[in-house]
Image: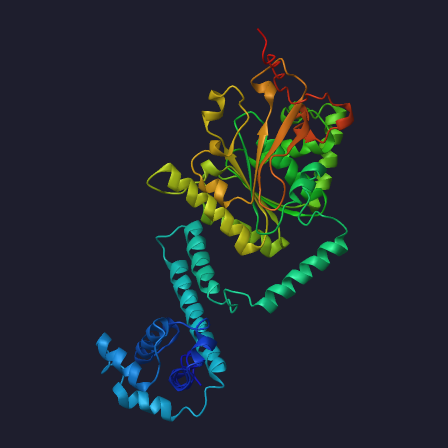
Length: 459
């Protein structure tokens, strides 16, 4: 058999079509396995399309009805007419093997697509008008498109499959001995509230400028890495050097300013940076600090990182800086939000997306953010499994210098929402820490004291 003939099976296609006209139940066995484009012969595509239309209309599918549908489409003669349909039925003794034949049709179609992608990729590589990065991007996109068709899983799970997956989850959670089912952020109160960073979840971390959302996200990354986890960080806000400076200060407790100024003449600073450099050698970290990034480029970076280091936590800083083309800002941010959610779902990993807030919150007396303050699109709120706001009252009220940042859990799809958790600011060392609540004042948030209600009935 030559290479070309190995990429299709006319006999398998004929058996599928004959079985679909032989038995009414055959359609249910193959409808999720194959599509019109999987058939190599044009007449077979037309016949399958007619059968598909009849099935969609809940009508019988036999040689007569299929022939009538082909006549309606104006394709009867091209498809071989009633005579060819009769031959297909005559050569089908049973429909019991229809699924096996359908899998052959599907597999050969996938092989053809993969071969076409490789050939097109070779042409891209040889194209002298393309730069090397353009060649890499085009070849990668072609191969990813072809590989996407190789999934053999049906879209929906049966009750048995869903139940088996659920039982496995219950056992894993029970054996772990903890309610925290996801990757730990390193902040125990937050991990308990949201059960860690969970697979397929999009967590949105939002704040107005100067609240420390980037610092907190970098703290998440450092804590995950030092516990043996894997992180892909896409930042359009900082350079990789800035990220390393923050991680070093947070990791060693050294002054962030001293690290930024590279005071290596100071023995303490030199020792701290050396210790941090040794620690990060084994960290499974990738940082993409290009100023222009798209959802597609972030997705490619995540896929590449996972090939090398397995499942990871993705952190993106921040949503409004991602370059996506659209007619308006609301639609643009919605595309970004859905793109990040799709990365979480498709790769079965947690994604942390940082986001700006609109200025609306600063127009209120109480400037603590609300879900309606999410900048650009309500789609962010819809797509997120968790939305967490950072708020530091001392930014607006310098007299309230208790040194705490509030983590406001505004949305928590699988847990309690409305919780407010305290973090102790140590921004001079580029970090937050969990405070000892026993040492905190009762009104640590700096909320205004309730006004004394006037007595009713007083004259």
